[in-house]
Length: 561
Image 1 (cartoon, rainbow, N blue to C red):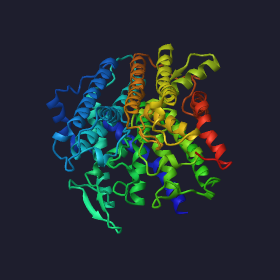
Image 2 (image 1 turned 90 degrees about the vertical axis):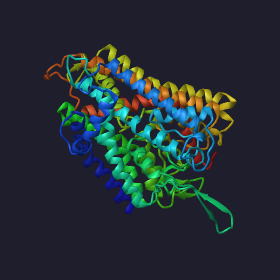
Image 3 (image 1 turned 30 degrees about the horizontal axis):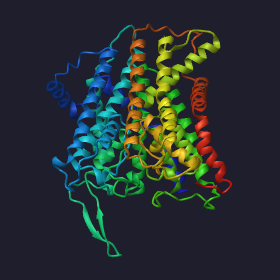
Image 4 (image 1 turned 120 degrees about the horizontal axis):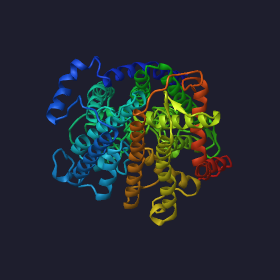
């Protein structure tokens, strides 16, 4: 009963608070008065003055994407160098050595692309300075980059006969100052109140009951946890991520972290609605996301609470924290994979095969069910464009979305955005399964081993960052392959999205008529869900059949790997 109440409260709060946050963010990005303007308005002006930004100047899509790429390149180089020279920098209380070049490349690419894949254990690898100046800063700006890109797309869809899509530097600054920073401060205080650590002290040594020495890691963790969840980053300060009691001490902190990883992504859907001056359009997208989220959650809960023929129990607790239980572990696994968050409070490697399939399929869809802060919305808009195009073919008329014609260029860019992560998942997984470097560190054989590899590259391509486990990826092969997978999964979508934004902004808006195909009703919601599932199914059913589906069937016969 307690778990059911928690689940209902989570879903109700998501539905109630998302429109409120969405309205607030719309005011922020439209330049209207809002509650945080008196608090951080002076800082926004100071940032523009010091950096020479002309906030009133807007950019076309090429200038905008140039700013995105240049800024992220600078962030990648800075984070890479911080790791390579860690030994010589301050706040290295435990005298940790420099990071290897291939791990530094992987980690820099990971946090720059908002993936936060970790081929290392944070408390044993990175100093306090690198965690704060490198990782935490990237948690803010990589999330702000995603928000900025979706704002450019929104303007492209809602403006007419223009090439102006806003100013990247202004959008990013406002995202950090008025959305991410205030929420992170509040959330950090709440986490510290629950027992999450926030200190610069040395690690503590303790003597166990057996008389052995144990090192207890500490650090400024709470502040990084706050932004890792709110910005759908997900990287843990400690290796065990949100299963670690210093990151996630109590059931209440668990609920807060769960809710924080989805609320901004959900709120941005309603920000879109306020830009369009159409709450119905926003509700249609939100309901689509909500239904897909609920479907995956229902399948995962049914599978986890079902009887396990291998362990001969129902509701297996293997790989789960006793303080959270089955429901909270499953809710987290679904929420973290639909939001491109990637944090974990249980071992995904220990999930039942069907629960693992749901988590993996969420990644494979491109993180469009709520998704990351920004990428989730522009990802599902790609599928909206495809759905409108398919519906137009069915009725024999030119497809339109929000009064603008969808033409060959937009469809080409949309297909490119869909194919980019799919290519990474299937081709990179095939390579890893075919050579010794990809198989040598695999912990399991059979379909479960395949699932571990598939999940790894699905996580990289979806910029998620979670892992099945059971596969040691801190090797030259995996660090490089995953790094390039994250790069393609991020910018292989951002560039086509910006091209669509630029193309749509130049078009006229056709007035609504009796022949207009509506995109704000239940018919469109069902069509959109069908297109998403069909595209995902056709693309990924063969590898899923060889992995988790075969494993599920064999598990029912008592066979495990």
